[in-house]
Length: 276
Image (cartoon, rainbow, N blue to C red; front, side):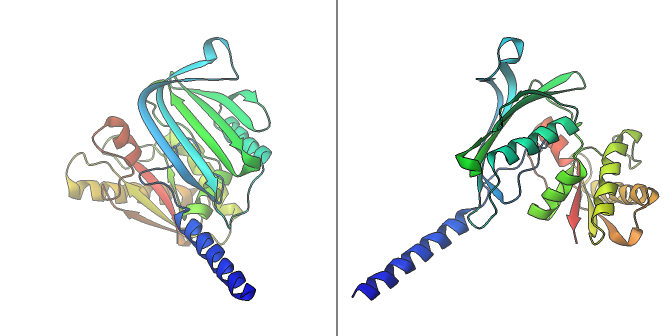
């Protein structure tokens, strides 16, 4: 009888574990903020975006204490089978990412990082806080006004996102409206992609262009393909073997945000690196 109870208990534990594992996916409609990728092995357990709200830092005082603007709040939780990061490891990763994009660290408390990024006349504040020995952590991003994405992900962040999701969206590749010529200010992003490929000799990528829904569908598909091809040529010009890259364009077919707002359209106009 005892043996039967033990087996039954084991079955319940296995079933529960399987149930938890199946539910360990990003909540519907959520996505990483363009400013940061996530720690590998973590999923989004809660997600909230408010077009205008206020966040008060419990760690700061003076003019940097109260943040107003678009507020994105993400909660991340470690997957059961994933290697859990320590709270210090989480904080240091985001501290380094913040510095890489020219941000200023305002608070460094081993498990808490707060800082701000000042670009193009706008200010973006960030709050990262780890909990439960690294089992979970939160990210709060407050954009003081609609932000033109000017953050360049470093090679390590690109690699982490590709490892976790099989792809990464780039918002540091610039083109004039309706054009497919890569603008010079794209060079920091192109340099990081080149570094990524040089550090990972076996990595092969699809370079996929995306547009918003403004204009003619066929023209947008062609424009997205031309832009992807231009990025490939730019990378080849920096020493990347052409055989490691393949360009494609999908126009407006794969949006990551609503095309009903200017901000959503800006997010949809992107280039993605997709692992072959």
